[in-house]
Length: 87
Image (tube, rainbow, N blue to C red; front, side, top):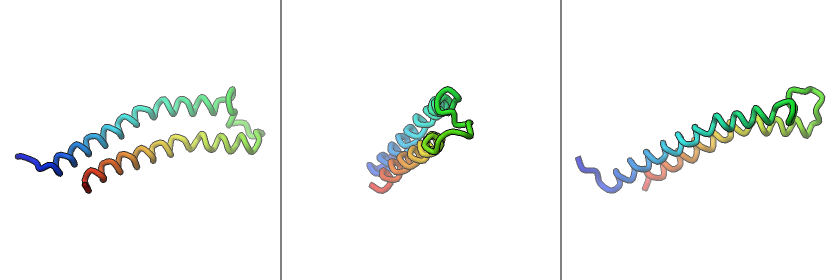
């Protein structure tokens, strides 16, 4: 079965989008390790209840790095895949 040019572009777009997603998922473990190390007692000491409001905000932002990273990766991979299906 021979695909036309649009079908080939869509298939390659799907493969590249999945590859982007898989490559980004590889980085989740190192990012998680960095977040754990940053929240440690020797760095931000986020488990301490007597830290300043600025440190609490920093701890919150550090905690949100991983969910935002995953959301951006899914958005980029999905946008790349959908852009290839619509062209």
